[in-house]
Amino acid sequence: MATKKAGKKPARKAASKKAAKPAMKKAPKAKAPKARAVRTVARAKVGGDDYLKYSGKFTVRLPKSLHQALVDRAEKEGVSLNLFVTNALSRTVAMPGRKK
Image (cartoon, rainbow, N blue to C red; front, side, top):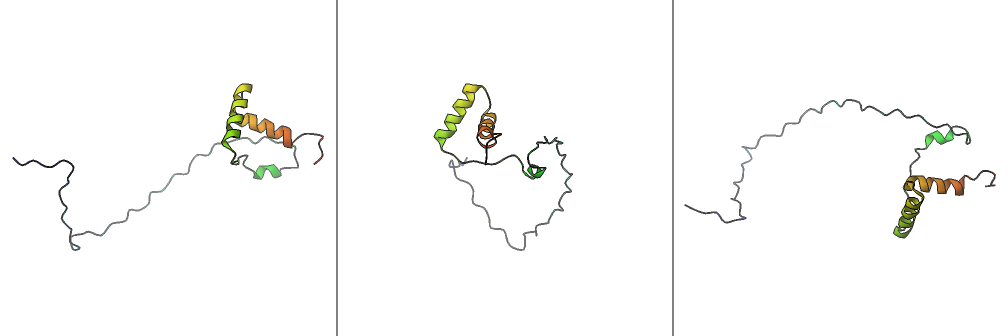
């Protein structure tokens, strides 16, 4: 009884070009349209309806130490990081009665 060495695979035989079958292309499946979530848009009275073209999302790169400080402060106030940052930006940028 012959034993095989562990970790070695048997050598593959090279297939001849004549024996290879051409690859058949599959027809793409028709994709059903995805259901879209219906969301209501809060109507803010800020300069007309220009705000509707914005998604309300943006990515900000910041130092890890600032990220940690923001998370700590949000936890201390018992709110999400998103709500804390939104409120902080609102207080800074959109202060009523403040001249631009």
